[in-house]
Image 1 (cartoon, rainbow, N blue to C red):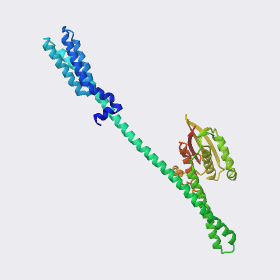
Image 2 (cartoon, rainbow, N blue to C red; image 1 turned 90 degrees about the vertical axis):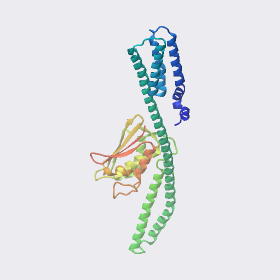
Image 3 (cartoon, rainbow, N blue to C red; image 1 turned 180 degrees about the horizontal axis):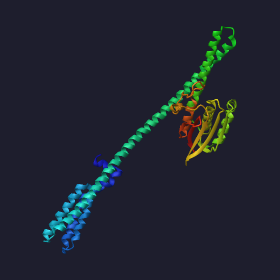
Image 4 (cartoon, one colour; image 1 turned 45 degrees about the horizontal axis):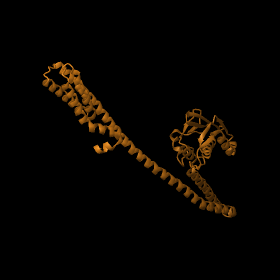
Length: 367
């Protein structure tokens, strides 16, 4: 950085002014102290020469260690000139004492000034580096946000456009099956059944893609959401599934949080439905609880006694189209939707194994 640039920088303005005026001001002080020393006729007033410490310190602060030591040498020369002119006998001890005082002042003050300047330069370089990195991160974050928005729009449009021709295929295949079932050979009936099954799976996948593309999107502002009431709505929606599986779902101390009510209901519904669905031979038991982990955060837990999640898949299952349990129906989208909803609420979601069997899904929300 040039001197002009440094002088224009707000952080370096005081230092530039000090360095600009340090040498003439120090020389003026040297001259003033020397004049006073010559004006005072009493040779015993030797403490006047100690005033040389002021310009010595000034030069040391402004220019560094070597300037401080050099100004200390100048003070000794001026003292010697005064002694010769005034015919004053100064002992070697007095010279040594003043030399030590001048050198110590110039050296130590200059040393600390050099260190302070080096620290300031390092801090300024670090600030500039951090500012550059911050700018790059903001640009990449903006690019990533645009890319994610484009991908979400693409997924929505593609899923929507695929749904219409798929409904046509499904409708005509169903019509063929009803009209010609039993009138063709058995293989033809099987082929029609394969087509119907494939279209049903494709329709389920398209619906899952649409759910994923819409996950985390909200038109309204965050509001206060009673998680106990939200879970009650979820249990009403899942009543048939819970009854068929003979499951028990209970809530323990669910608080009021801040967020999007519809998204939080979807989050709870996906987790509870999975807990009931991925069961063992035992009767499913699901416990939804919460606790405050900070002044502004709540940790919600959904614990079950199901088949559990292998440790090596604890992170992968939150990715789209990933399923930890083979042999179960589903598109592998539900937990990806949960992860996106939690991320929208600036929280995190993870899964832990239970010592007595099953899993605990935990996520954080704003209190």
